[in-house]
Structures are given as structure tokens and as C-alpha cells.
Length: 182
Image 1 (tube, rainbow, N blue to C red):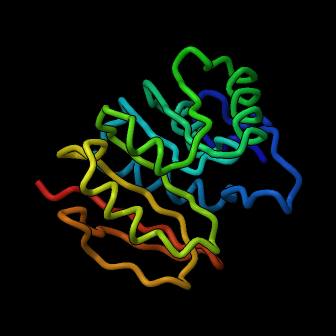
Image 2 (spheres, one colour):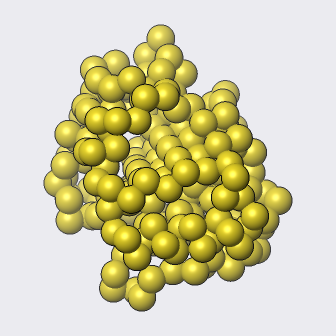
């Protein structure tokens, strides 16, 4: 897996064995960042939930993000994220939280400009996650939430003011982009 754009474009990222995680494909990452590049989204603070290899957050750092927080509950993934950040020389602009997403939502205090969430496709709680985010202090006035998910579990178009603005399908992967209504 390689970084698809920005200053470290082409850098190979380390991953876990195929069955351990489902990394976001380069086609999907390119689609996400194409939408974000063409939006008014600010890139100062980014949050990568269910980070896995850290590919989405690393793409954001490569392109123009100032700071990225990564959250994943698996120690092996946290180690790979740190290794990938070390490889691109960006450990100083990041923090890796090795805990569950629900725990991180309880202690993270800053609002984020962009929040990536790429939960396991078998996890039926994407709607609950969106509601938790909408009700949290992590989503500010101009926050954008990018959810990668399977279409097995239907989503609403609104979660307490977090409104669906765009949805795209790439094979089995759906990208749903939500913004906080101002």
C-alpha cells in the first residue's frame, strides 16, 4: 500500500497480514481526498478512528494536515501506525491512542476539522458512532466526518445536526461524508 498524494506520495506503508485488517484501498483514498480537496474543509486538526495502518491520517499529513490523532484498539496496529509515521518523518505532528474508539470519544477534548472513521464492515454500530460524534465536543461548526462502510447497515441522512452531504460507492465500500449544520 502506498501514499497516493502530497509530499510523501508513493511512500510504501507497512500493513498487517491481509486477514487481520481491511486497509482502505488507494482508489477509495483518492476518491476521499478528491472530495476533500474540492471542499472548503479546513485541515488543521484531523482524527483517524479505527485507524488500522494509519493510511487515511497519513494521506492527510502528506497533503496538508497540521496535526493528526490516530485511534485504534489493537496494539499491532498502533505499532504499525508509529512505524509508518516514523518512516515519513511525521511523529512530531501526531499522537497515536491505543484504545477503543468509545474510550477515545470520552477523553479527547479538541474539535477536529476532519474526522475519518473506517470501522470493520461487520460492525453494525456506524449509526451509533455518528450519533456519538454529533453529540460530542469533537465535532465543531465546520467539521467534516468521512465514514467508510459497507451498505449492510442503513444510515440516516442526519445525526443531531450532522448532515449527509455526499455518498459514493466503490465496489463494496461506501463513502459517506457528513458535515455539521451551522
